[in-house]
Amino acid sequence: MVPNWPAALPPGPGTPSGTVPLGWDRCPSGKLSCPRQVIREMYRRWQPLDESCDHRGVFALTYLRTTEEFLRTVEGDPSFFSDLPWVNHLDAVFAELYFRAYDAWESGGAVPPAWRIAFETAASPDEQGTGDLLLGMNAHINRDLPFTLAHVGLVRDDGGSRKPDHDKVNQFLDRVIDPLQIELARLYDPLFGYEDAEPSPLDEIGALQMVRSFRENAWRNAERLLNARTDAERAQVAASIEAEAEATARMIQAANTVPGYGPSRDAYCASAHQ
Image (cartoon, rainbow, N blue to C red; front, side):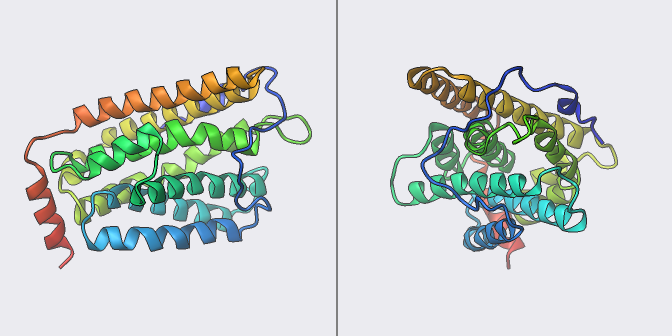
């Protein structure tokens, strides 16, 4: 549907082969059981949000459907990625960052600023469903993904870049967006349906372009983390990633706030779940 333009952009020159560990790990073996475990955990978290019409269910369902499509893709074509264990490892670590932010928020702990804005806004009566979706995507891609990529490494053992595998993710994301819009409109917010300009694909093109931009930006920020020469320089890069994601979150929040919209949105969701 949309040209996978990030695939035409080369990796940055001289990116080192090391990693920037997060201090913990998930599924380093990269077995296919890893995304299956992630999906089970996503269902466990999404279902109570769905049943209670919690606004956080919008992003939780989106992430779940995306991961299900990833699993379908690699089960149907194990050679889709050049290094599937690496992608499975990345998928598990990436999901864990979302789980940890969610759990920290639930327990009253500290969370990254972009996630704090997303969770605070989800409790607001004024945000449209689109805002909840974009805030979650921003926090997870612009904030979490650079740290995930730096943790799992950007360079193969043979010295080649892993960017082609990173960019191939865009191909299966294209298959998620249209049915997802329909499901989000049916379950949570009718505005998702009004924004789905069928039969025109223009709304999907716009959304996919944004996701591609977020993911390309995440790769470049991961390169910055790995290229940092000192701990202090790396801390500055990390702080800039946090600040960028926070600023984007505030723009999304402002653009999707409609005073008083919540009651009608919540009533619609309650009716859809009867």
